[in-house]
Image 1 (cartoon, rainbow, N blue to C red):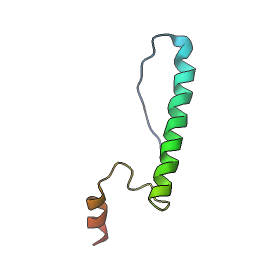
Image 2: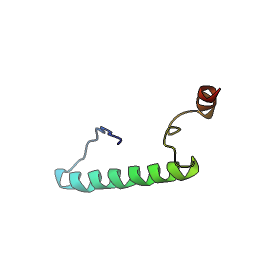
Image 3: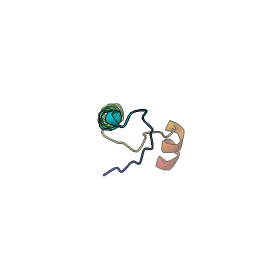
Image 4: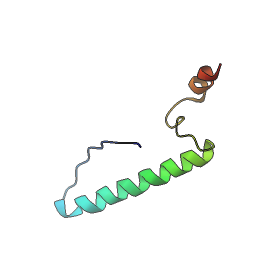
Length: 57
């Protein structure tokens, strides 16, 4: 389980739900792409490849 807290401001409160939904969809899509490119691992999300390789040795 991943829990993220994002702080964003909207000009019109009527757009708040739309923006929250958009952020959620984009985040889930990015995580899915990251999972595919790293062979099912989300560990490398935002990490440099060298730091992950250092952990393996």
